[in-house]
Amino acid sequence: MNFWLGIAGLGVVLLASAVMGAFVILRRRKPATFREIPAVERLRKAVSRVVEDGSRLHISLGRAPLYTPQSGSALAGLTVLRRLADLTSAGDQPPIATSGDASLAIVSQDMLQSGSQATARGRYDPTAGRLTGLTPFSYAAGALPAMRDENVSADVLIGNFGVEVALLTDAAQRKDTFSLAGSDNLAAQAVLYASAQEPLIGEEVYATGAYIGAGRLHQASLLTQDILRWLLILGILVGTLLKLAGIL
Amino acid sequence: MKFKGILPTAIAIASGALVLLGYFIRTPFLNMIRIELLQWAVILAAFAILVGIGNLLLVHSSKVRRQQKGSFYSVLLILAMLVTLAVGFLPLPLRTDGLSVLFNAIQLPIEASLMALLAVTLTYAGIRLLRRRLNLLSIIFLATVMLILLGSAPLPFIGEILKINGVPLLSGILRPWIAQVLAPGGARGILIGVALGTLTTGLRILFGSDRPYGGNQP
Image 1 (cartoon, rainbow over the protein chains, first blue to last red):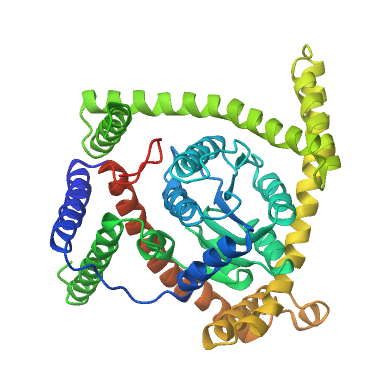
Image 2: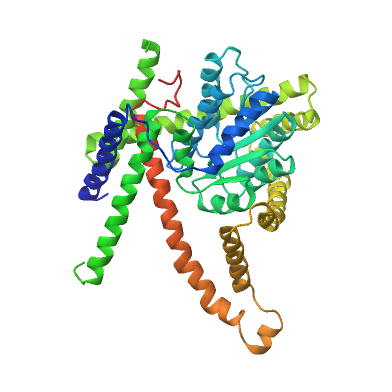
């Protein structure tokens, strides 16, 4: 990487950190209000239903190893897993987490264990966080029985998926269960738009945490994303105008 | 926060910050630390596969023990796992031949059939989309799919007679315009959003707000 490009990249990271920190301090008293994402509203209702009828929540985290750049969406999924584990703590059954990567499966077990310690139930089920397969299709095929046979009434699929995710959303559709799904992969997003009951497009995947009350820093990070997006739009427009004017 | 919670958080934040710095500023020292830490991560991930396979075995053996629905398939999975493991311990060249048979005769056909099933599933999902979510975006989505499909399809018989490769206006002008102008524009917009989301997710972990590495959240 070019030295100045590296410095510019580091500058963006530092700017994002500063903006995020500033929002955490400034918004301490007055929480931010965001546009409504209908999918997340319906997720809240589905979670309440899970608690009321004693059924289970299934969360699938995709198949991106944690040490790759694709793990961003899986990390967003892990936040959702932790928050939903807390929200369903009053229910009869703990959530199930499935994943297609071993490191992700271990981390999901850790999240579920932390969640169960915080509940009155207190007992952790080591089979609740599962590795279902190591190839895309074996992962999907392994997650299907969990969705079908374990009294699941809501499926949340957030992570790095490929087109195989359609098999999961189709299974949810056939069982008439709620399904909310989002991915960072473009092909998967197109597939999810057609097949999921509630698709999350683009950065909505990363916004879910802020919408389900995962903490102040989640709200601050959402505001930071908005500011950086406007800066990028401005940069693109200025660049286009300079190019048109023949300066660049 | 107890010491038990502080230590992993401090290690994770320090490691993350060093890898990030090493990525942007390529000094020999930072580069060495970055590569070393990433190699550790890869080694740990390899061990994680062993733990993951143990977890898979635990899940399915408990399913068999409790005689849950579909436990027959769990028995098959455990048997397949043990057979594959046994083949992996065979001496060469039996091991290579055995694993190649297992892969080509079982894994490959099953994955190919799932791929074929996916084609049907996606077609069905496309048809169901208008019934489930009838709005302008869904109509545009399906219309684009149809235009791209029609623009990519060759014209059998007529094409040979008229010496053309596809539907004239569609395959020559409309499909390339959608695929090379509109689609990349939209895709870049989505990818910028994804990149910003990934950046802030990473920062939350660096700040110790999200802790996927154990312990309770703050």
